[in-house]
Image 1 (cartoon, helix red, strand yellow):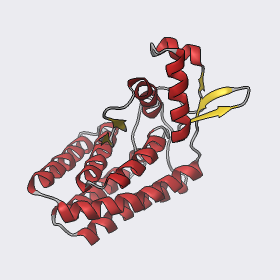
Image 2: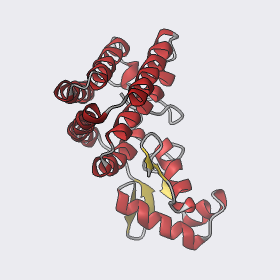
Image 3: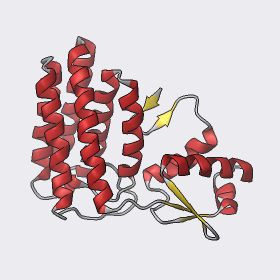
Image 4: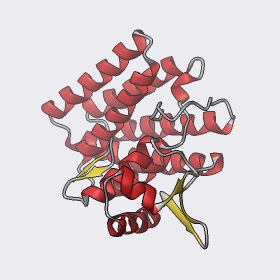
Length: 228
């Protein structure tokens, strides 16, 4: 089972997960060189474990290996980030449609609690905390769908976007829009309205993609993570 917010898979190789987590969180910045001896020392991994982890990360699209230059963390361009958001709009639209069809009272309560937390953080002016709450809300929606194929695909796309050093929540006017968009998604899922839920999710993520396309996003340091 995969935690969509962190991207961690239960039962996975702990060495791989340690290195993957550092890349996904932004602890290792895009385009950084991945020197086997340095990773082995920093992460207390054998050289063999490092090599195996790098192979898996390359297959996942998080690492690029270049002849005579070694491995580096793959950088995601603006254009690719927009495409990722557009793909997520379709996939997450599907997951909220399914979630709305199968939601129970316990699931509805969990969604409303996450949405309330997001609102509280925005009201308190904690924009980065609200962005993390956004990621958790999206992860919960995907989890509640029970759609394992979509979960797997979204996990890979999220790994790319979390490392993309942008926070759309920092755009003037975006916090209020984000709250309204997420509220519409949760309201439709809780009301068991699949079509409205899918439309609301697609609209939300396409809005994020359009904001990025207009070039209004601000780059921030690697300690600040999250999307939407």
